[in-house]
Length: 224
Ligand SMILES: Nc1nc2c(ncn2[C@@H]2O[C@H](COP(=O)(O)OP(=O)(O)OP(=O)(O)O)[C@@H](O)[C@H]2O)c(=O)[nH]1
Ligand SMILES: [Mg+2]
Image 1 (cartoon, rainbow, N blue to C red):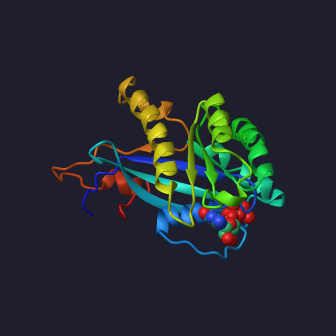
Image 2: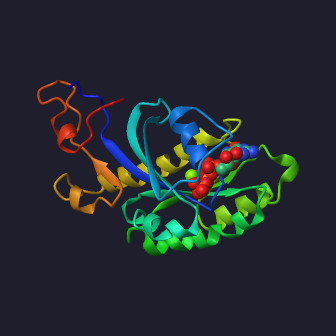
């Protein structure tokens, strides 16, 4: 297998009330598709995408994305995935005020059940195409996000606006933490310091002496 240059792998989780459009966001981000009809997620679903980060898009990272059911009856299943996530997208529907009011609960849940090292968060005001039915202003979303130290993005999976930005914002925040940790750690101490949801393979061998070996071992066989 040829080395693909992907060293970093991050796990992120998407949280929010039922029908706010979590699955629609993920489908748009990963598959580039949107369908009006969408079955409620049962438990947890899994997506994967490789992203190019940085000003020159030179840093490629692989992102595992966990789509969770918003329905209360699946909560004990979905909670068990928080622990392995490096970051979370908190999603509400701008046309349904209760889904915004519940974001504080989702954030508290993620903090309680997430990794002790903490997670990166991005708040998404979703379905912003529904301007005539808006029940939460952009300012309210921005205010909540800034009060909790996270970025705010308005998005619509239907129109394909803001979706890439929301995920890239989250992965960039995780990546910045990882690079800082890497810079302040010796290669031997780094593995023990990496938080859940973050994996770094050996530096890709562009000379080709042991191509892809660590990637296969880590289950990161390149499909990108
Ligand atoms: N207007 C509008 N509707 C959307 C958008 N995205 C999704 N929807 C609608 O919202 C419905 C629910 O979307 P889902 O993605 O299934 O919602 P979910 O958050 O995954 O729901 P659960 O899996 O039950 O937690 C879809 O059937 C779409 O009709 C959007 O950007 N704009
Ligand atoms: Mg869903």
